[in-house]
Structures are given as C-alpha cells and as structure tokens.
Image (cartoon, rainbow, N blue to C red):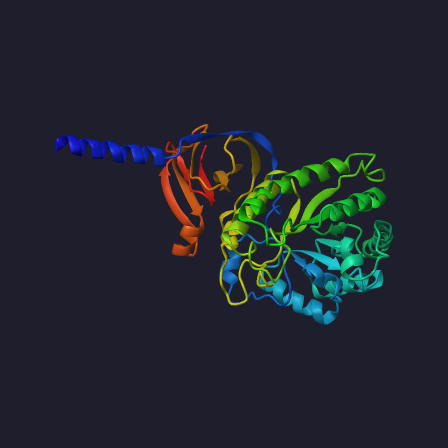
Length: 417
C-alpha cells in the first residue's frame, strides 16, 4: 500500500512539474527616453458618443486628449457653430482634454477652417493642434475623386496652414493622417513628406493591419508592425533624400487612429481578447518608442470600435487602457528572450511598471532582474478572468517569486526597484 501511495505522489509531482513553465528572465536596463504624456492617453471622439453615465469609467483612463471629428466624419462634417457648441458640452464633460481638431479637407475650404478657429476662440475652447483632412490617400477610391494626389494634398495643406497660422502662429499643423492601407498609405505618406516636410509639424498616420477575418494567430503577429513603422517613419524625418525640405526641422510623430481591424461593422478582432492583446502590445510600443501622441479609434460605441459599446457594455479593450493609465515617466530598456512574449518598462516616482503581453498559447513564468523589493502588485487580464470578473484580477506576491503569465494574457506589474 505504501508503495502505491509513493507512486501516486511521484506521479502527481511529475505532472505538476511538467505543467509549471520554466521561468524566463526579464532584464530591465537603462533609460531610453521619456514617455510623452500624450503617447497613449488620446482617443477619437464624436458627438454621437455618450459621456453621461460613463464618467467614472472615462475618469479612470487618464484621458488627456481627443481627436474630433473622428474618422470619415472629419471630411463629411462642416465645423459650424452648432457643431462646435455641441463639442464644447462634450469637451467639458470629458474634463477639458487637449483637442486635435480635424479640418474638413474634402468638402470645405481654408476659410471655413479659419472661421471655425475664430469661433472656438470666441467660445473658449483652446485648440492644441490642427489636422488637415482624414485619410486623403483614399479620396480617389472611397470618395471617387482621383485628383487627390500627394501633390494636391500638399498644395491644399499649405493653404490651410496659411489660413490657420494667420490666426495663431503657434498652432501645430499635422498631417496627412493616411489610412492603414499598406503599401498605399505608406507610399502616400512618404510622398507627402517629400513635398511638404517644410510645413508639416507632426507627421501622422493610421494603423489598421487587418479586416477582422484573419486567424487569431495571424492577426496577433501584426502587432510588431506598429513599432517597425514608428522607427521607419522617424528615420525618414532626418533623411535629406526623403525629406529634402524639412530634414533639419523637429517634426513630431503621431498615430491618429489605430486598431486591429478597420472593418467597423465587424465586431471580431475589435472587441474580443485578440483585439485586447494586440492593443496592449501596440500601446507598449507606442509609449516606449517615443511617439508624441496617439488617438485610439474610438472612445465609445461606433460599431465594433470603442471601449464601451452603445448598450453600455464595457469591453476588455477598456481595461488595457485602465491598466496603463499611469504608464508614464521614463521608458526603460528590456531584454527578454521568449517567443510571443513581449515586455515594456516604465519608471516614475511611484515605482517601476512592467507590461507583459503573452500572445502565445503557452503559459509563461517571468523572473525580473534586477530583483524588485518587497511585494509587487500584479494585474492580470485574459478571457477566463474577464468572463469571471468582467475586469482584470489584482493580486500581490513577493517580488522574489516568478510572475505567472498565462497564455493569451496581459499583465501589468508594479513594484519598487
């Protein structure tokens, strides 16, 4: 009998050891730059979206900036006094965030933009920056006007800039906010920079790598493209061959729309855990690679897009932004060798934060070096926990213990180095 018990104990011990993943080491290194306060705290916002009833939710996001009007509405909505009066009410309810206002390029004129600017000054809404048009690379295909080439865009951009800076020469003027279509959007972006880099203050683009029909694995693999584009486009700015008119200028970078899928009526890969994992990995790259601003598409209820749907259902994507509301301070170098597991680090006066994103189907365990002190707080979000809690789980553990990173999960660790 004792021998059978011994065999059972050994068998269960073997299963336990086999199911416990070997720990991988995450090394946190030197500072690599400051995280912009607006790097991951901006959202596209429209008048059809609700604020009342969601104040507590939005208040937990550290929402610092909005882009208005959102998406295609920017080139379909005239910025009339009635529209701007309505915007003021929403803006005040949101806590008066910084405003990136998108001038209607396709249907309006520079004079219309200037009139809107003067009216906003009159009613007391400060404009942080202007954007000229939305996704002009698609005007030919989606709006039936093939005359919209990079040359025409730059010509009109200069006219809008002249009209707006005559009112306030300190307003940054941004563009061209090309679509997520690749390679077409990137080609348009490069040609615009070549022709008018002397007048663009912030180079902007959109990221939508899929249409919501890809496999989860293929869709998640696109998250690395976010950082690749950030680094590539930054390199263009100082290259005299690619930016001959503005390579000596200090031009910023901003992603003014982003999400895993562009297909608004398709909820798959916009409100599910696949979209959540992709979003977390994208935000880690945006924050730590020096992007000045980003604006998620969208804050609330626009088809499959939005952190909260029109019925008030809070999607798991919301909780990624809530987890990262204080992911600020200094970006730190990280070294981690684990397939499909990425890590990002930020340090500020409140301690060290580590964002871990496991896009794989295997559980991981992570040991941090240099070792953190005392206890650490661990926030964990995955499908199982969201189904149970409708939120992320918060636990505390000894800093010396390995951090459990379940398959397909987002982890935020906070501790003291």
